Image (cartoon, rainbow, N blue to C red; front, side):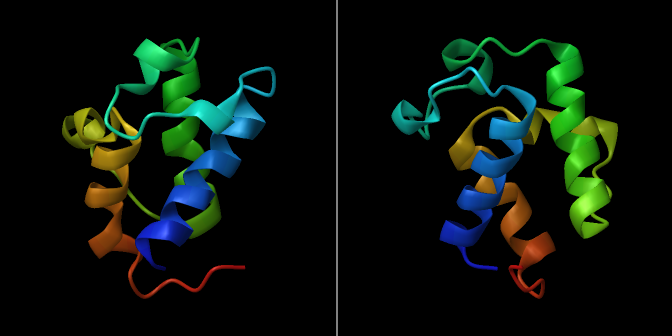
Length: 86
């Protein structure tokens, strides 16, 4: 997956978790929690959805890497580089 593919995948996951949020205005450098009304369970749902869709294991210590779109894409890129987008 490319950076763009990963970004689209994260947007798709966010849309399923927070369907009422306007995701068209996401600022990639700002923390998700500062932009969206996500609680800790929503955040955990993102991690679980990545695991379910792509079998990616993210250690709890690395959850902080998933704070913003930019940091999430940067963190996931090496993990998802060989995954094809469906």
